[in-house]
Length: 102
Image (cartoon, rainbow, N blue to C red; front, side):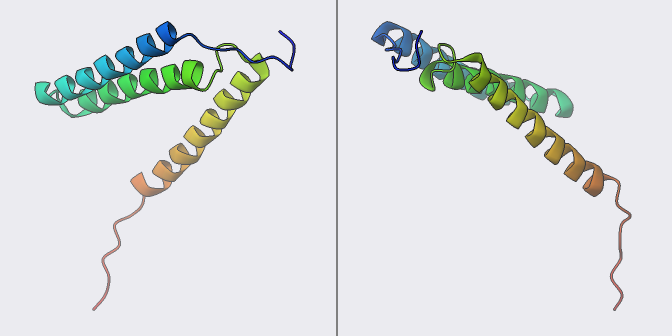
């Protein structure tokens, strides 16, 4: 595909993705009402959120039909964002508790 042409996504695909997003949203609400133990509820919610974000990036943003370089840029930016959040958590999770003086 040359760089001057654009992919036109069919209504059928867009409606299927929208339906999938709606079902995943219902699944997110269902997982909330299951009241899973603490680490598993967050893991389940984040897994569903990643699936929904991947659908949006691939089909609504057109990365599925775009050049692979753009997908690599998206993945690299998400990886660097994960590193930023990870280092911030390392800093806040392992701090000493400071008791302010009066």
